[in-house]
Length: 451
Image 1 (spheres, rainbow, N blue to C red):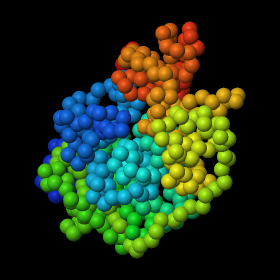
Image 2: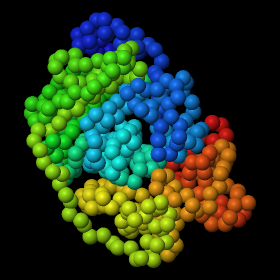
Image 3: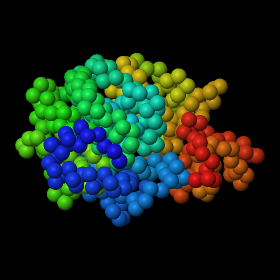
Image 4: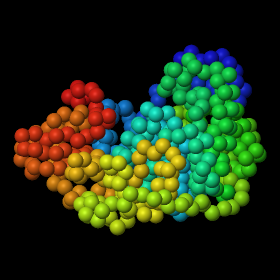
């Protein structure tokens, strides 16, 4: 690995020679592989090699072919870099009641799915990504995770200005120079430059300034990067505290985790993950509480298209607790919104580009109601509402490849496919074949028999 001389000089000055030498040794070792389980979908738990700061995270001895595992596609676990799972500690130590949260730079979904699992029950999470393709990937991962109180948006930070004091927590995993990914990403090594570091630092401050009014006074900002330099890390945190008005907050950590504190100000509570000292990639995180106190803004309830009682009755039995939801129709979609957040979700939809919210329960086509794939992924699905068919791994991969299946012994109509007890999605069995209803854009593109 050929690293830029300017990076070596700057990082040695920041780290000190001994820490820098340990860091360089860490870069020469193989990256670790880690996953985090979805406790709402699987009983699997970290039996060996747990990630110490993540209750459901574990290290794997080797990297398997995740695409060949139906459990991966069903949302039973997420492949997440271990260091970034540290976000869970913020929630565990500072969030004790339901909140409205925003993950501003959320794709592909590691921190978002971590938040969906860790936030107190009844919380609402808005996951945003401005880049269209990345936003689609984010929406897919959110749907697979199966939580009902989620919204996925595709907006720039400034677009949230209409939602003043709206969020209790905002997570900004800021676009950065990517120094922490050198071990895994040769492109990050090639693209590094001092000028890029300075551009990233300016962009990060612009993003934080644009989103600041959406965080209520007394609310929490979680700021993180996957880089090492002080300009994008400690300097940015101190800028937020001094210029925007916030107090950095400490987190309790175990010294055995190998996390490094501030390298510029010993009294500044920030948390650095450095390869060679922690089992993960480079990562930086700080928590700040916005000065002042204020209630969260309560949105106006927009007018929505009300569903006929007959339509609601035809789909509400597909959910375990239908009385907990408001059912609305949006175009061809019938959407179930958690009642405690339906007004907020619809208010967001009026002002932002929303890709997903709540549970898309069904599609209405030619006066017929078809179950939507989002329903099959939801933890609120009532599995007794549809005949279920248990499939083999070979059949599961064929389904995920979006091939036509043959289920001659199964009943005719909509069927829920399950793999080892976990829902995969719907088919419509017409007797001689079962039409595959898996989303075309999610299909496995490589031949599943080669995986």
